[in-house]
Image 1 (cartoon, rainbow, N blue to C red):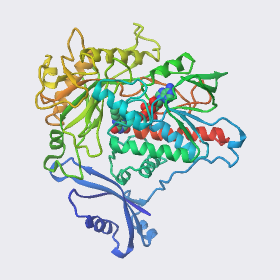
Image 2: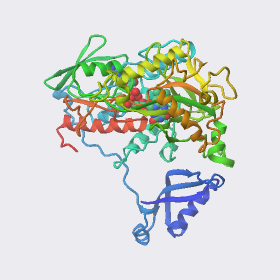
Image 3: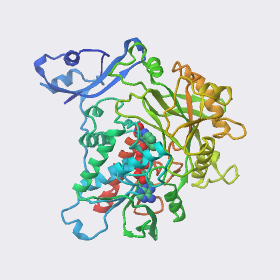
Image 4: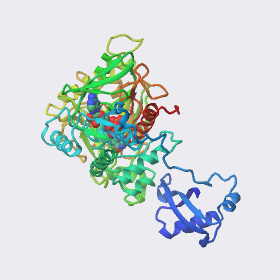
Length: 552
Ligand code: FAD
């Protein structure tokens, strides 16, 4: 199979033109092209009036060796790489009868799902323990917060089957380096579970919330069919560690489970579990993360700014953006988790706190575009002991998040309303009195205020100053970005984990054997795709350890 990269065609080309372009690029007659498939399709919108599609195409041709020889030295015509997934090993048929404890996966978000799936496919029959409910029950609880201001601290946007990414935009791209094509394994499993086939070839695939629900259920069924077991409403509250080796765990019900290989796929909001790990002496360290607000604009403003006359073209869909500004106070401000045609959602898992995030459906056809506008902070910024140097308590980031999430609840006037302000007023440092052209989508609602009130700021002043400087700077890249009526909603505090559960090359905790920290909560992933890939790699290490295979 041959792979052609960077085959560029106009946005609105007819379907047949692609085949003709492949033939022309390879210089072969029609009969010599036996088959071809699109591996990737991206677009280049640098020139808005002449947007170009850029294809990567895999081709089956007659006389492949001769064609390749003609393109020797051309980086854009090569042999297609083998992207199929290779298991590190499989359990022998009598493995279960040997009586070793099953591998345990704590958490059934993208990381836990892929860790459990790979372990199940290797024949290791994992036991999954998830504190939240199964996805359809969880959906009702999540809507309970959005519609009725009722939070269930164990079943919400962060906790439950599918993890934090279930009520999301379902963006599936990631910038991780992927020499083993593990992202392909994730995408292929998603398609088998019901995701649209296009996620395999579009450059920025996304799924949207409704489809994710069904896919998560299908992946659960696949794991169970392979001998895995998935238990919901099973909150792990303690770990049993003897001489630096995991021996088991305790559930909130009091049940104790023997375990020697435990994947910790907790997500970034498992604050009580982080505290338990710290108390048990598991090695943790404070890490940088970011805080800020969600911003909402009419999607049409973003489409026109990004695509000009091609705004609305169905191949391009609703436009996204990615922005960075280095502020004069030394802080970096950037857009985070942009959701085209989506809604801002209430994402707290703790009572009397407000946290924002964004989601969308597959169609991405809601009226507003939203994104986090966040500022990077480091452990020295959020240390809670009043010192200015030295090691930072790994739980200080959680304490810092809680302060601002509680403040947001107060500024929102209670009942999980979020505090908000128009961009024009934020820049002028004045309280907003009424919404303009942009109506915010956050439910249960937005309470207008002054997010930068000097007496009661919604975030640290250096964060507010950096964002105030960044908004007009972003206007230079996206016309309309600092429009006075755009709405800021606060606060966005859970951009990534505030700590790292540090691990070694074998994916085990630095000081606790048998404990495999994984995914976003452990500080090793950020997003659905990277969490899924991390779950695969961690499962491989567990598999190697259990099957007595050599380390990678
Ligand atoms: P999580 O998905 O957080 O899963 C962890 C699981 O562990 C949870 O289900 C939790 O209940 C469980 N758990 C925690 N503690 C315990 C315990 N003690 N016992 C038992 N179970 C426990 N990313 C993208 O790539 N694209 C997007 O479009 C996107 N949109 C998002 C929108 C929203 C609203 C949110 C909240 C996040 C979004 N993200 C998105 C981020 C993405 O969801 C996360 O990066 C990803 O889910 C992390 O996966 P994970 O498996 O590591 O952790």
